[in-house]
Image (cartoon, rainbow, N blue to C red; front, top):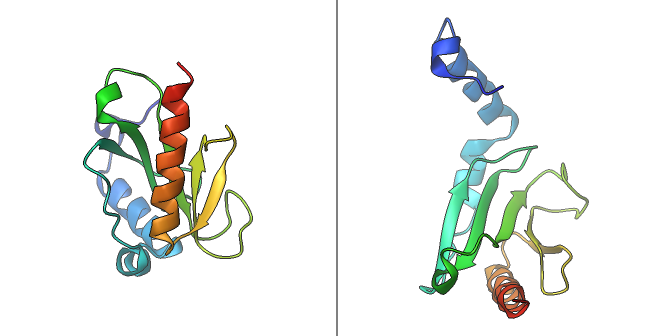
Amino acid sequence: MAITLDMIDNRMEIIELEHKLSKLLEWDKWVKEVPFIPFPKKWEVQIVPPSLGAIVRFRVKLKEHHDDHRDISVYLDCYDLLGSFGEPYWEIYPNKEGDCSRIPMNNITKLLRELKDALKHLYEEQ
């Protein structure tokens, strides 16, 4: 069951929980360190809430396939909570092989190349 604001007696609980989580996951640090990503204009990017310890999550699809339910999922794991990489990394799923790819956080060129290949493969399967 989802928690709604009406269910919380003290709305300060949300702020307190968020504050604890932001300290635990060092959100202020990552705001400064996560690189900007120059997404191609032909892509749609949906920012979604992070989960399971991911710092950032988003989904990518081609604009020309707006009504298609398929997309590529991307998250940023900075603490090896979701996998083992040894440094902050992006994980994309599915990649062009239908598996996952892990890319160092600061290698945006490789991230974009992997996403481009994954999108091409995703929509060629129709």
